[in-house]
Amino acid sequence: MTNTLVTTALKTIANQPEAALSGAINKSIETSSDWLTTLTGYVDKVDDLVWGVPLIAAILVTGMLLTGILRCVHLFNLKNAFRYMFHTEEGTSGDVSSFGALCTALSATIGTGNIVGVATAIGTGGPGALFWMELAAFFGMATKYAEGLLAVKYREFTPDGRVLGGPFYYIEKGLGKNWKWLAVLFALFGVGAGLLGIGTITQVHGITSATQRFFDPNFNPADLSTGVQLFGTTYSLPVMIAGALVTLATALVVIGGIKRIANVSTIIVPFMAVFYIAICGFLLLGNLSKITDAIELIVRAAFNPSAFTGGLVGSIFIAMQKGIARGIFSNEAGLGSAPIAAAAAKTNEPARQGLVCMTGTFIDTIIVCTMTGLAIVVTGAWEPSLGLKGVDITIEAFTRGLSFLGPHSGTIASFFLMTALTFFAFTTILGWDYYSEKCLEYLVGQKRLRIVQLYRMLYILFVAIGPYLTVSIVWGVADTMNGLMAFPNLVALVLLSPVVWKTTKDFFSRHG
Image (cartoon, helix red, strand yellow):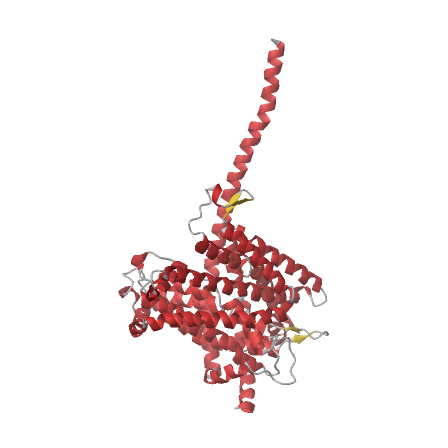
């Protein structure tokens, strides 16, 4: 009897901690899940606040202000801007050619925004959103011009000949030492945006998702026989292969620094831009008779969206907000990223590089985004009755627009968009590595380059794990920091606008 009681007591003692531990673990998991959900909710609210009306209005008004101050002189010299792009000045200092600097900037701007962003804007704001996107780009060219000009004017050279420049330098040197705190804020946001998603996780995740959509569209994570188990989750083979290849390619390029990034960008960016424009042009030629009606629809829907969206978009404000916000997200005018690359250009003329820099907005939005938008509108892929969102709208547009190619038009469209998204996203990874490195270099000082080298390794690591991270909070944090970069930059652009005008006036007085 005693033995029985002892045995029962021992079992009770032994089992009690196990039950308590099990309950504690389950409670911990539930608490962790609730905590993550709550935190994600807060991040989303902050993201919506940062990318709300104030920021969009500030960027648009700054562009309008600079356009007025410059009296559109930069726009009247668009032809010269393209000419300067391919002609490097003699006896100049810098890391790369003007064309190389532009391609580095374009590598970070021409990306998913040109394909998915345009579709999202039109899908939620109606065809009129494209009109407001173009209007924002028109004024955004003035912003990009000012950014490029100030980047070259206030850049610095290290003893070993490297170039250091960007908003943090024209804030500190142009506005004075008392404004250095603003420059530090910009650099901090730049490092965060590059490392936490805009340059790494979101881009590689976009590549692997597009790869899976094409090669394994019926993949089911619950079916353990259809994929590879990793960290307790099943992933498709195309995702793992694509992720490994992108990581390897990224490592081979970013370890070489700005010159290698520029060299790769000058090959991939022009090729993919021309390739994408050619396919879009081919689609539009096949639907030539519908283009005039599409343009009329875009303009009319910009001022009366409800008449064309079945009441789903009931105000001009929504069409404006979606179009302007997606346009800014695509060309990054006002965010302060492009001048980091512009500062590296081989030139002695700040205004000259400003002209080259503004062609980035023209190419990105006025050309590439417009062609995507026209393809969506002429094919009717945006219509609410289809119930499509994001990239699926673009896929439907190309499937319909290329239907004259036969029954395989859908496969052709999917392959084309997968290829475009892959290369555009890959170059964005490269461009943002350079941006965030320069931000970090400003923060830690020129003598601590070992920290920058370690950062490159960390950047590559984030690219490697990107395909396996699906936590939405990463997207929200990265998007928020990307938007926060704009505030310090816009303050500097407005306060330094007299310098922009004076430098511009001096340049054109000497060069006509």
